[in-house]
Image (cartoon, rainbow over all chains, first blue to last red; front, side, top):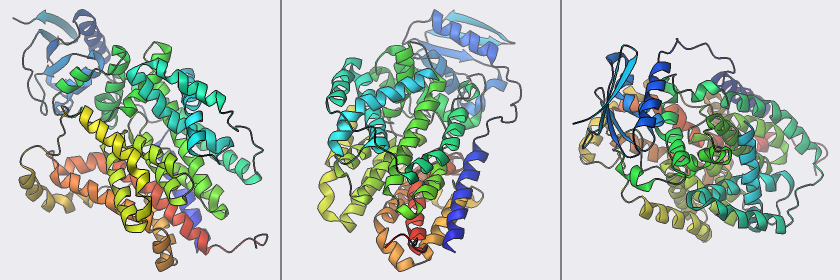
Length: 111
Length: 405
């Protein structure tokens, strides 16, 4: 019995680890965020640290209301909000508007 | 990948002196493993304050003349040999560029982009911890209240390379897990050490590289297993302190260990002074960072969430289910004896899970979504300890080898 349990533990552990860590996973559906990445990186270059940036994104880029978290990764020390946020409070003030529509981006100073 | 390897060497070099001081009996691979874990803390601390602070620790390591090269035992060499394919597998998996590709908006990788990788990138870009900015982050999924050991460790390869190196995180993650496995090997009964470490490998080499789960399990399991084996209490205290600095669940591990020690071995409370001081210092530093669990309306949330528990847990799997079944089976082979011997580990596991259920009870998020998005990961925090208790129980039931007295 003890040997069986030991074998179960070894094979169960290794099987789970290997199954959950595929070296060649099934390809993900083609992502259309490469263009958006380039635009966000451009916004990062053209705005100073600590700037507050409000993004206007199309509904398909909502990421369940968490798109602002995705953008933060590329924008570093900048406060970020979008028109699609569900879980974050609004920005206290807005320095820049970044508008992403039809695969093209535009950055404007907010007035 | 090369910067990940350089980082691991830096961790070992920065930690050898401290590890040698805290565990005089360690040598060879055990000493290197302890050094990688401790050095990970030293290097992260140096990066947080000033990189040059790592230099005295590296000199200390050189002057202690650590006994790194010892003749390997046959079982030790065999254990390394059987572990190697899985370590390589995990390293290849954990360094896949797709895991760190921003354009793939995968739900399964959110914690890397929202919390751990985000903060590591912030620290790398700023060249220091941007405290004011972290304090200004809203109380949302970026968890500004989490400790910063993991983002600092993840930022080290990029700071060395002077360029953002996200896939090097996979090497750091693998090295910390491997170090925990070496310590577990030395804590296991000899009869099951090799196969047992193989069973534990799946519990340490977790499928979430770039998250804090790997470092948390590596530090907490190493510290707790060293405490259980009573072989290096001071080192165990340091490893628990580092576990507390990985994420809030690490602080829960320290609290669970304190209660378990109070029940099973009250005289050893002093070894918790180090983690207690580190946690107190962190709580003072992060006083202005928000935590979501204690937002107003606590009792209303408990009343709302508790009835939803059955629905939330009905269809969600636990990490490593076969390991849990085998471990429970092992403990059931001689329940009274096994539960008495492993009561320290099992108390910690029970308390840690109780903390997690309490956190779910007070969560301000949708409970079902919260459980579905986290239970497989957070149940992995204790799997290595459960498996270890099962392995010692199985070992007790195995016939002795004819060469043993």
